[in-house]
Image (cartoon, rainbow, N blue to C red; front, side):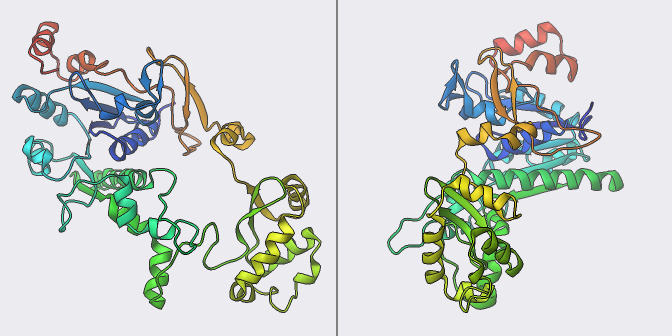
Length: 397
């Protein structure tokens, strides 16, 4: 079955993570994504480690379902080929620093004259405007400047600032880019016109900091790292059991009562200090000392058995090995196997969007560099074998 974006053609001038993550998601949703890469080298992540039979697992993880076209954009013939591709595309995505596409003669003002219906998406560190616009940016910079690092860590005096464990700066911008692109495609059905989607990594982090931002603006108090604890509710964190950590959530008074009964601590339901959410928060240090003592008194499985039958919210702290084998992950088919001509059969993460009538698809591995160049130039631009051979001989493709 065709995905919901079947019939949409995306030309991608993206490398590294933010842009490729966005275009990967578009491909999962059924769009045809043509990844334009530099001849001979390609996306910089092609040399990243670790490798599967010599192929970068990083590259494979975010470039599935795409076609690879090699093209020297600094060559005028290469630029003209890019323009012809753009004429036949619905979406253009790029994640260069502002100014790079303009130097290549592929900026929005130029492109929208070539194809007024195109949705042109720019994903960058700081956006197309503002005092930081021309600065380079990577994930850690976006995390630090966007505030999330100030909220992440143990909160103990002298403890270091901590990066979120995966590239939330890149991936959040990629996902906001997908939202913007799809919104612009919907609007195009009414107006008949494309538009420029401008998404910044830093903006995306500000948007995700919504709760912390609102608390600061309401109280003037700067939120600090709290480890795994929620700032507005407790228990709502990780506790150590006798053998492994457990995530426990029983923040409302009704959930708290369920927890107390399941834990054999009925006396805490109406406890002078712990009987209300407000009381637990106001006495958080003492509360957590008592909670830590209680939770360490049993193994994870003993707690799991007690909580499962009592509808208490809980779960393990999974590592990646645990996650791959988790029965929920397996039932939801979140790990799939694909074939690659060089890497062979390998496992990748599936798309989390489940659609009943037009399902997403993840059945094609990341492309070999330039694997689709001839096909694209033949089918989309009607070039002959002789013309393609000449372009290859001159280094344009």
